[in-house]
Length: 308
Image (cartoon, rainbow, N blue to C red):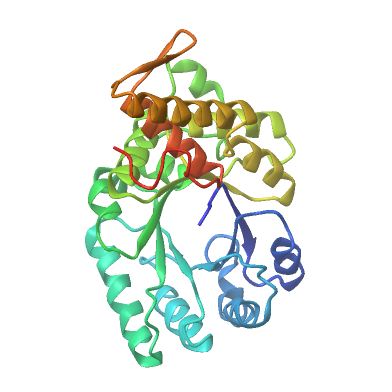
């Protein structure tokens, strides 16, 4: 499943949900947490159930975000939504998981409901890494269970947890100028590496200034440079930019094809490395090229079914 863009939409707003489902976002997440006011939690839960059952998802994974494990709403979100849809949910986004124990608690609850309804395909989990504790434990969280399909950086809550001064989520401010380098480099690098070590997706958090598409592009490119697979969107206008950044360019795709062809020719000749122009190509280049084609949604058939 491609997760270049994850569009967050308030779980209680039917009109916005319908618009989101018709968008080009790879994933639409019905949000019962921050986008839903406390007094509206119960009503929004019913809207989420109806939207999961009857919305036109157009092949997108049926996804919602529950409330945090530190709230009184989380267990009812999971129990009522899964029971109300007869386990018709593909992915649950779990905020504020602090460690492996939190993930396993969710897994136990979800598994019990799946047994009740006879669901055999495990419901996936996307675990948000948005506290200092979660960053410290992100490697274990990413590998906590086979249901964990992604980990997502939550910069706003992380900043509050870790004591980072922050003017707005994803926005540059005077504190960025005060620090010689990117002050987000450590948590983002660690999250990305943890995700790829576990074979799951790394998703970057939102960029709050939804009208600033140039700023969004810069933020998304920084995330992709650190190995992230996609980014949250909080407005439909952000989707085009995010999808573009996290889709390999035509030049990248053509270069990947050239690498695969060159390596196949080198293998047939019994040579371990070959040059494309002034660039030496070896098995490491092959692996990078294959990842580029996977990111572009293209089949990897130029080098045959096997490979190093």
